[in-house]
Image (cartoon, rainbow, N blue to C red; front, side, top):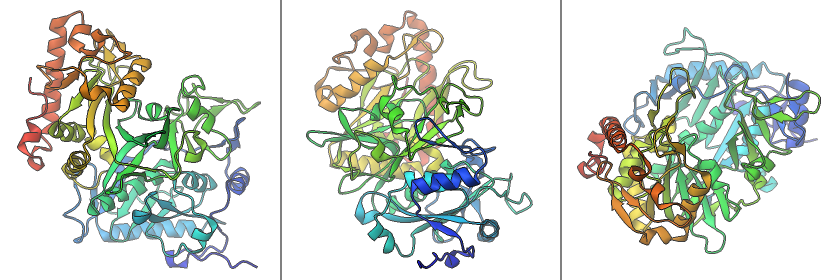
Length: 529
């Protein structure tokens, strides 16, 4: 008889521990033990995260410790927590897990590059959470699992039990606590699975820069023939996942990567795609990846046929699907590639003044990387009646541990050493702001990305934007010339100039927060008009 798996080193005394059980068995466990869980007509496990249907960034805390406090960017992204409070919350989580009839343990890896691979252990009470992390981490072979040993990073997911609001520093019943020294994360009061995924990425954002590796919130692909890779950064709604699902290129990953001396590598073993309004026609690769083994979160389905209605947002707009990267037909396994020839920053500029494609200098690359710009449009949130600028440093502010300038400096070193071209691509509005102009057609954006990948835009004609200071590409096969220069696309030239100066001012004001940690030439490379 096989010896029961032992988690007593983590304080877990439950005898019934399900370690790395297969998706088929996790389906059985979920259907038997999780109320409301079901199976879609395409074979996905449908699960619900309860009250929390998204991350809780204001409830994230990092233990302030003498060994790491000088490395952490303290403030609204990383709220400090004392060691005693972390220990109290950790014990609360362990006590809760010990009351469960069975516990699920997932031992797997983060990082496809073997020299920096992290051994991750997830301890949770829900089969849905175990299947989610089985998909999102890199799955070990049976031989690797047998030799797994002591983990490098542990997640205690007690999300079904709330934090005690009277515990020092608690601002709600939710708490996401990270101890860099203990290499542990404790989750209380949230059953949203994405917290686990981002906990791993947050720790990697601390660990990798210490090793001279740039951690990146981006997607990555490579040319099937010559292996030349590229990375695409972009906030939600800019097209990062859509543009990386290109059947003509091999997919390295859709969200989290590292850039080492060897090249780029995916941190994850799966993809976590937005499912809202998903159709096979619009995104066939992602649609077809949502099959047996995948998890669909918080979706509405027909109870008679279990057909998912991706247009129904009555539970949340943040419906998502998590699936192993092998479900993508164009996935490159192992998920590693050479140094990127191109680095692409995607922005959805609802003001309609950012050019469709510009090439950035080294200093501009640092500036726009630290800025991490996009814009919300009217109607997407309560109270938003006109375009609203959004800045998220390094295109992943909530997951940073170090100051953004630290990551920008690493980016500058990498692009200089490997002659990587850096591009700013606007997937947003042209011919006017939202409500006047129109969204850049996807076919034009794809044509721009294709021309970047082919190398054609490196020698294309360019002109400097007098207000934003960008080197604007003025010719690109497959894109009308009048669309490449925003000023030409606007009918009202006075309104264009006024809006462009407004956006330039928003960039300057935002960058004031980072100027003290950035070189003067970086600050000077941003919009000056």
